[in-house]
Image (tube, rainbow, N blue to C red; front, top):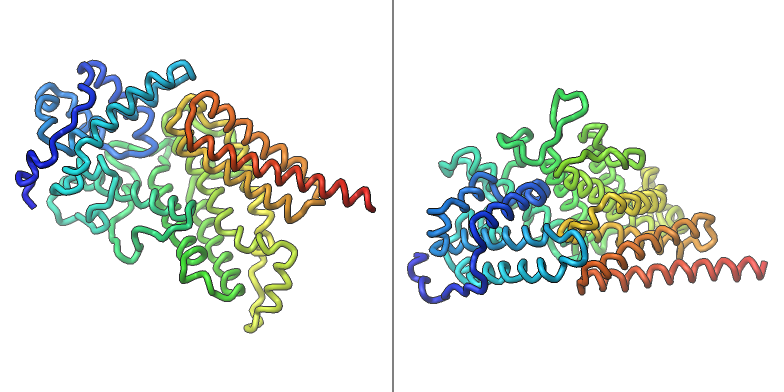
Length: 425
């Protein structure tokens, strides 16, 4: 398809003029410093080149570049929200520039794909195949890999969260993982001994590969009718893969309760926090299918095991592992930057799911001595989300708050049940 055929068919909708060059440069710098380390959509040098005078003049002729710059400006303004007094002002600015990008959405979708277009859409336009023979330089190849893996991670995350089919199949891709030590050091952090680095972004991609297997073997349509003994064996297998992944992370950065205060003071700290939350969430996703059996787990395994194969002992720890991971996720909440609306939006799901996990534990074990502690943790999450609703009004956050209030009610009902049972005894 020739892009010239589309010119004039979908006119640009300039809803807001670009800010002065100095303001653009400042917003781009904020984006690169605070957001791109977590989600490296853009190669910094390429994005900075858009701020040059000549490129700014010609940007209107390139829907991909125009949309990319406006998306960056929109995110940049949201990153400036540090207190509730600025929410409405910066949010309005952000939305205007996002509308600028949406104004060329048709051209992005129907025109010839290029990397700027994919970066603007963060979509999947034949990026699942390797481009090693495309003639691109090493930096461009690495950026293509990053774009693919960002979209890949999002796909696995959305599928596990919402229970929808995966958009990409692992068998249909051959894109290499991001480089262990990229030329621009994006996503890397030094280890304490200074003898090496840890690539948190690459590690996130490796974790996404395990999430893909979790969805395929435990939550896909094909996995729905498998015998429970096979499901239990799969839980053990996936747990082993996850622990091997954790062991591949340098000890100082591994997700463990005792290391909750080890986050470095740098933009990559957000990557590490996301990685830890994502790990604990993956533990819950793997083990909740067996944890849901509660006290019936052993009986179900014995009754349905026609092959007389002893189950892996780890499945009998499923409920405990889910509970510990949920507690860890909620404890990590204190490291979330409350002033950063974008990062909160990316991460708040994890403590909310953790509170649901704890409420399920209370319902299954209403007499457990830990129920009061778990109820307090659930209420901590509710308090945290309530503060977000007051500081940054948002329909999505309000919906999460309603779910949390339901979880708190479940915890309270569990305590009432226990009190009544004790009084009857």
